[in-house]
Length: 267
Length: 235
Image 1 (spheres, rainbow over the protein chains, first blue to last red):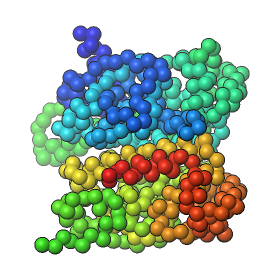
Image 2 (image 1 turned 120 degrees about the vertical axis):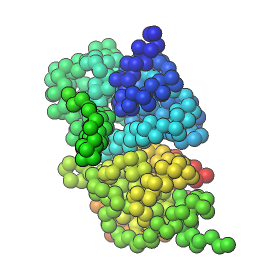
Image 3 (image 1 turned 135 degrees about the horizontal axis):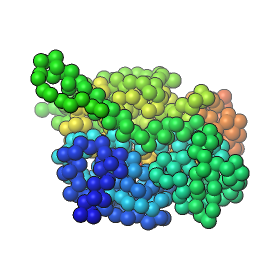
Image 4 (image 1 turned 90 degrees about the vertical axis):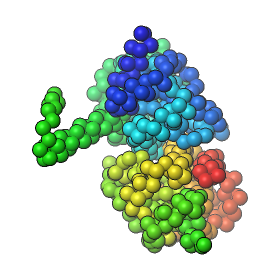
């Protein structure tokens, strides 16, 4: 019963699952398992065969590029709006990125093989995963610009907002070392920027926790990339609108055919 | 029984198709010559065709609100331009510009969508290519952050050299700055450094690759990582 209720929360708690219609979700539901992901947990290491796919519900996961000299830069952030391991759509795919949990929490996990088989039968599920894939391409592309062109202070604000959008709370456990690793910069630079945001009373940073105090002010300090990142984190809103649009079209079509179906109007 | 001539063998995706799949698509492939700087897609614009490059190269550019652009990826004979179409998206997330002029085979968007929908060899190849593109884009995004302009210029010249099929590259400073996401002055000084060690010759937008192994030694590991992934697409 507990299992059921946690997974049912997934229906509304994960953007991809929420974009599936109830029938598809019910069929997929039997393949999903609720798992708790811990902070810093490594989900994939480069070269791994991809075994599980995760639909985050209460956690945030990141893809990180690791260079030969040990330098690290985050390349993707995936929270309750997305899927971790969407590459499982391709048979025999081996992982290319370090994929680690940034903020701990619940996710719904499915065997990669089972999801692939499911997608072969379920066009809507495949469509949704591919759509999310394109959203991920947009996020990653924007980082190429942001990383090379924007100041650290702006990038830090953007990154904090991206985490905030996915965390669902104002307070999250992130150390300055972690921020530096994700942004691909030295800790001293992060320290300076965090101090500046604290002085402005925009954030508070105590013992490895960051608390967002004034979100609007943080948005004002973020780089121009943020609105696009934000829109991408809400990509499924567009899907829902599209679905509704499709239904309207269907209604119009049936009306023009003189159909006498009775449908309740949308709220 | 003769197979239809396959001018496409120089495009790796088309070359990897079994004869019956290729036959089905052959009549939809239209050879076109594209010129330097030609815009194939605008960011946010429609994608009427997909393009299979043969001996040319296309840059994917992300535009900034201040008017500048940064290259996020490039496509040559190893792939196809127009991946968002098979992912179900109608608008291009990037501007696509011809960086090295030459020949492509183009195909109507609906044809590639229909073929992708069949779930055959082409759809598997395009999914693998999509993964390689994401790796390229994220590796370049990370590279722009942590590697020096010299390393990035060497990496970019190698990626371009692979696709150009020539040691002579026509590239302006503005172009290079856009490609590397840095200032013009930074590109000039990096090019002078590479010329100083004898791996390239650089004069007014004309670059000659003189010592490719030497260039490989100077490039960051991002070149090798991305190349290996593209090689796996059709392996």
